[in-house]
Each structure stands twice: as structure tokens, then as C-alpha cells.
Image (cartoon, rainbow, N blue to C red; front, side, top):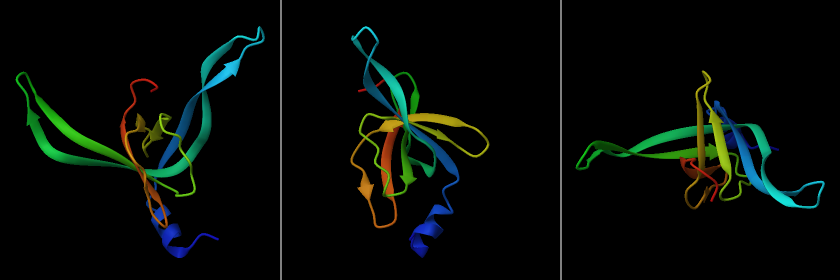
Length: 120
């Protein structure tokens, strides 16, 4: 049974996430390869953006420093290195992967994210 606090918190989760793992598979000729496998789809979550500093100035350009975090049910297990695709209300899509230790709480978990470039 979902407790009242958890249910209320989940009302704020308007985004949906898909989790993809890069897994080994065996071809018909017995050789192995790697392929993307969807392990979780359309799971309610919340994507949060936080700016740590307004702007870092470099020699050539100003760089925005931002952290991204996903709030999701604490019973979901997402393996490190997985691709996390988050679709916001309105259809904007973001691709991330886990970037640090997950914060587990009694009613949710917080997963720090970085933009996805390639599998680890």
C-alpha cells in the first residue's frame, strides 16, 4: 500500500522516463554483441534543473554550470551507466545517465544526472 506522503509526492511527477541498458546478446551464429534494451518505460518521475553558479567565465566563452536530478519511486532500480530518457510535459526529450551516488529516502530517490554522450 502506498502511503499518503509518497502518493502526494508522486502527484508532482509529471515527467516520464525510459531506462535503457546496453546488454550483451548472442547472435544466431553464436557470436556476441551489444544492444540497447529497454528495461523501464513510461515511469513517472520529475526532472529538476539546478544552477550551482550563474556563469563560469573561460578564456573563450561564458559557460553555464548546471546540475540535473531525477526524482523517482524508491523501489525502482536503475543500474549505473544506463541511459535515462526523460520526456517532459509538452514533449521535450532529454537524454541522461547517472552521474553519482543515488540519494535514497523513505518515499523516493534522487538520482544525479549528466547529459548522455555514450555508454560507460
